[in-house]
Length: 247
Image (cartoon, rainbow, N blue to C red; front, side):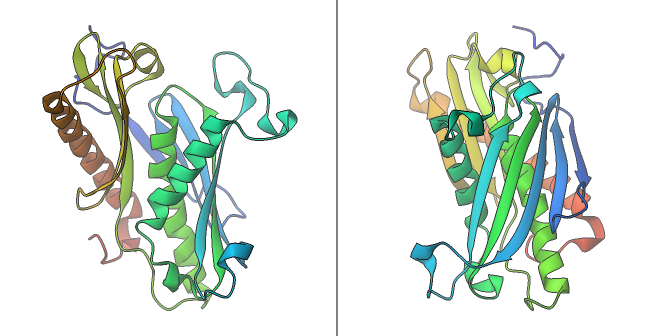
């Protein structure tokens, strides 16, 4: 089926990143992926959760939310319902795992926590992958701010991290599904990789049909290509601030 926006099946939606979008966060960005927009903020605070105390190690934790007017119909704030939904918990943990995989937690300078907040202000599919890709930029800037303040000597980031979606719609394998594609996909997959193309996490399901190993390999190859393009965009956004870990 032709894609609504005229993209080829291996093409990402347009990406726009506005760095340091917020005044008070140590690092932040507005990440736009087509009509999906996620505001990512990161700040370092003293202390870690009780289970982590006396380890001498830092931690990274993430929070994710859909603002009430971000979707087609207004959704209730989860705080009004008393607790985050299972979906929100899942995405928060995914963002945290993705960032922790490319940050040396010994390098946070002690028992400090990097808090990353990802708020979806407009949703059109791919919110979790956009949150991960944008959160990396926010985390990078937060840690460079932490270093500039003399809290750490070296930047503890070991690699880039980016994420994208891939799926099968009407028998066609497509990269970076928008909502109208994701909502009818026979197969839906989210893939997180580092700057060297190594897999960090793969979440895939046959929503409407089982799939063979050959098809899985095709989807993973497509996701790797899309993620590599996102990493290149991250490199360009970081520009002169680029560190040697990935450049």
